[in-house]
Image 1: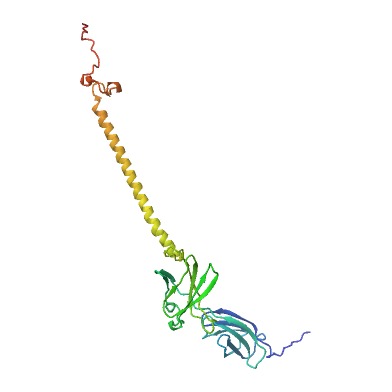
Image 2: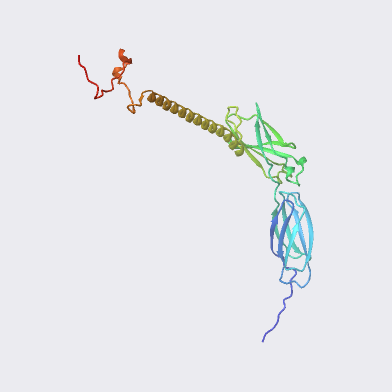
Length: 294
């Protein structure tokens, strides 16, 4: 024996498993499941989005019969914070969560140029890669003094450079540049950070690793080239000297070579400087020549 029981759907239950699937700079994809399995009719959901920064609300309606619902919330702001609630259209119990959008990227190519009594910060326009950024929003600059362990707000600008003065000798500074924060500093862009070492020598000491590697390479490569050239010249000089000595010895040996004896004849050191140096050397006697002794 068996019996079939059909449960009466309870439309007062909240949606299940509400969560965020993906967030971007201006949108967020959320997902949830129906209050009960296999709805037999279309269900109307109310998606309420509250902007926690601007203190504004928006409500979207979603009508579907699917058990699993995926919805994209659009027209959000980069770096914003939102509170999202989902419930059935009959004002049943709700499910809620908080989401945050991706902030604007950091400016690229942040560099430092040292002048006589100040430095200049330069960077690329953020509008080149961020379609949601308007130059009229501008940038804000912060400075961290590692010796004093203090962070200071230097100001903001709509240009792509900023002048910094009154730096103290012997202090190390970190500068950050980011899209200007909106609504009491709650919606900011990602910061670009650069270290500046003030050594008190008047030298430019930017902490950009790429610039440092380039400077090191610019010094090391010429030095290595000069060393190779010096070694090459040294080898050439030694080779020429060796050839010269070899040729001198060969010429000297040839000038003392006796073709009759088949060997070179050298005088001893005791005979050097004698008056009879030009006297012919007696090399031997023949057996058929009589010897006469006076």
